[in-house]
Image 1: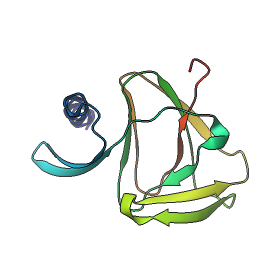
Image 2: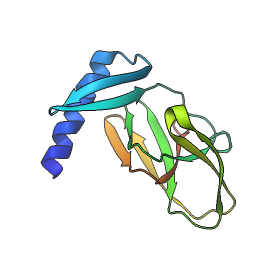
Image 3: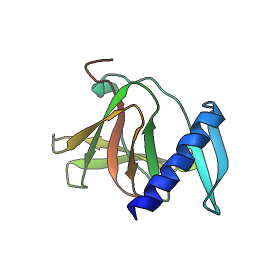
Length: 129
């Protein structure tokens, strides 16, 4: 399984580099599968300006091309309340009241995958930003 993930990751990385960060939806062919992908580039920001999100029907692959980023993540619990759903990008926005979560720091050439329903809060500045 790890070999497959590494193969897919190198395919995604070459697509990202060849794509030159053109934002928007596109169809990628990876290992014979047609994968619908949304590409966007963003600057990190203060944690209080970032929202918690999850996706109902999609997998979210977060790839750090350069710089660094903190992403918080958590299991569902009663402190999370669904705020709204944005259907065209399959994103649930959540409000969170307690500090029950973990984090990872993405650095250049590192990726993380959030499966459907996984709560995460991306785009957060690191101390080096």
